[in-house]
Length: 125
Image (cartoon, rainbow, N blue to C red; front, side, top):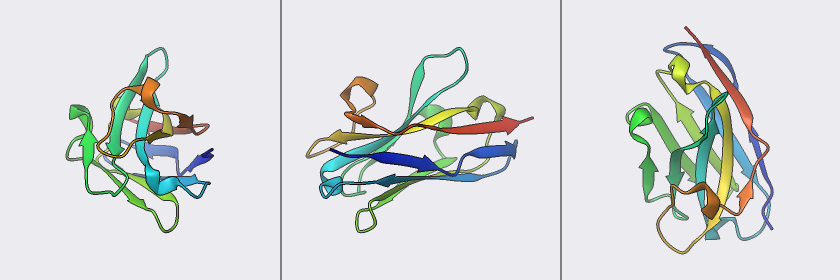
């Protein structure tokens, strides 16, 4: 069992930055690839980024490449999403999710076993 709690969301102007954090409980945190997915109002849930168990492999959706960076600290059971040069279209609820796998990452939400409650990110124009 893994419990995930996101923090760090808020209101920011376009061009600004936010850093999301995801605190995970459980002794097997390092066994999980971690993802960030988002849902904008009236839209389907969308993959944003994922990081493998070691932190050595990351994957980003095209719209955030070069602006967002995911990282993790297995010693602290933490995952981070640094978001720079934010755009109004980044406005969404951002969810941290855990996917138990020995290698790689997934873009498929259904493959993630555990989810946080989400944190709202609002980017004003």
